[in-house]
Amino acid sequence: MVPAVEVMICNSAVRNCIRENRICEIPNIIETGQRSGMQSLDQSIAQLLAHGIIGRSQAFANCADPKRLQNCLGAASTAGWE
Image (cartoon, rainbow, N blue to C red; front, side, top):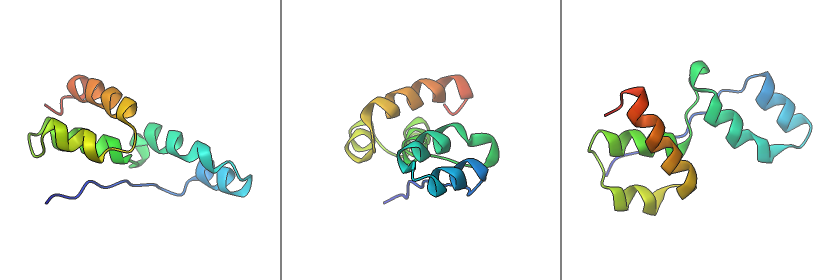
């Protein structure tokens, strides 16, 4: 068993979304917040898959959004995770 983790840093964008009750926008902030140390669950799963730690079927069975995971997998190959 291997953990896949989502990391959210409470920056001004996240605070504004919470304050203005725009919670549905937070996943996009996490997805694009890699420079500040954020990571979505699907990005974490994509890294585990790219490193051969989990299999493709396990990755898609446990991801939050299969389409986002597929996008992360495309990003993984260009980011040098493989």
